[in-house]
Length: 243
Image (tube, rainbow, N blue to C red):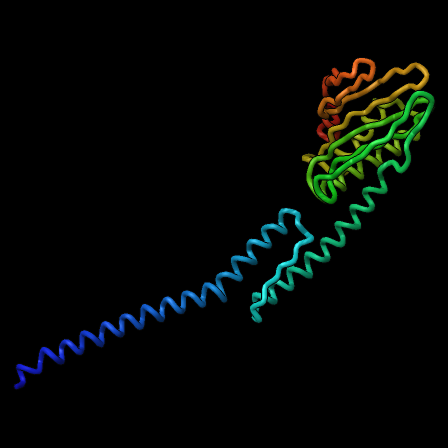
């Protein structure tokens, strides 16, 4: 009788072991599911949103509703980014005010411009103004993106505007601006710039290129566009010795 009952008990033990293994597998899957849904997924979303913000999308909000520290961290990021966004918008308004506010109109000449930034603020800018009887204008691009480029552009613009009030030649204005950029900001910061001076009396255009892309010249008589022939020298801020 003992030998007859042994296989039945062994089969029952194996069945219990199988049930136990199945329970552990189901428990592991359940734990993994809830861990992914309530822990891993919010962290992944937070990382993705922070990555987008780091690329300049400061108008984004991180929406995470977990009721724990991850949600607190997301809210802290939102408050920080909101402050950065407000400062960036203010900087953009200030930078826009530095651009020439009015068109220049003289006999035979009408000068105006438009700028569309790649980001809210940046290092691209232009300017034009009267210089004695001539019209001076330039287009420029400062190294760096965002706030860094905007600050460098503001320094260069201020220097050119200041130097132009001293009745100096454009060569002297740009040489002094070059020294200002290198002296105040050091190596690694530079500005490419194309500066032109147009005489309304003779219709002559005198220009200097400091490492900038060649401008396009449009001739209305022939309805043609062409690149201006102007060999570029060093950008402003690279070297005062070889400029």
